[in-house]
Image: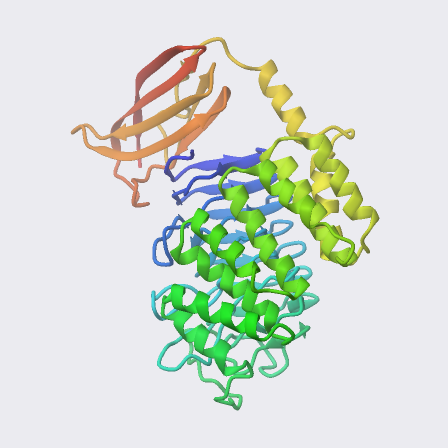
Length: 509
């Protein structure tokens, strides 16, 4: 479990931070020159209005700014620039994006596969939208494999669900829709000329803003008040945007059961699964889907419902059950694209959940061999394999683990901070002989805590903590003497070992 992280720097690592089944709170921190700035897996935000990754700088990371697998954090006011890929979202990731900058990436601002990010202003919560997605080397937003990003939806009466994003100057397309769903991207600023954004696929971008958000925001295009969606779905969206997720889930379910051959059927399935997440526990959602499947005959609908169940089993830690369910659903009537999606699911489970790299690579190879290079599954599988085999064909994960084992210290150690005195920041190195829970608290001379840093289950080895002379609220503190207290608690076989040490820090402005 990852504790709260405030005002830290993570540079030149494999992952700046990696979380698994935890709800991180990360603020005011810098992530630069890592392979992964942040790697978030099976972690979620409590709700729209509670920020849990905010005011961070995530720049110049060689693979991803933020990589998510079934992760749904709320990102607020982060600068995510000059990464190879800014946001990479896989398998049920549904982050809320609010006032972030995804700019100047080599390839994508946002890539999503089987993921449904919320990139619009939600009037119910007063959050979301106002993002900058611009100057990326390929696509601003790339949606694949029945992803359903929402960048603004204008058909809910008496409520504002506009995008209010700036999406402009991305090299190939502002929005690339490689799915069978309609992507709504209304009330956004597309740069100049107003009425001609470069989009691919079915993207509804009218009405649009006549100037960047905050500078007038007049919709210059004509707007048909009638939604192009069937009224049943539009009514369901009204309930969803009003946070009546139980009602919305039921309405979406009714639609895909009663309209199995509609062009909007898969959209309804995706939204049904998304709304279940908001109001039901994981086990209840799984059982609801199982009961729903009894009323479904459309094979494509069943395929998407099964995909939702794989994700829920992974959240429950039932990885082998998820693999068994995937195997049971690989049938002759599936398309080659669907089989490739299932094999990619298996590869991700083996690599990221079971740490079985060899089997994961086997399924990655199957996907690569049986898909075209321009398919999203091929791109994901090729990239995953490249990451695993970057150095001399050996797994980076295995190599990193081996390196750490060879450099594990024999005892706890806290080294003197450098520089000291300092302005504006100082760095402390500490060493752990075992997996340990660590806590660093900095106090002023009155004994009042100024800032705190916690990590649960940190791996053995040498680690750095950088204090930037700020308190937990991100405010710069005054010159003076501060006391750093370091506490580590680890376990060697059955014995609990605790280590603590204080250190004086002198800040001179």
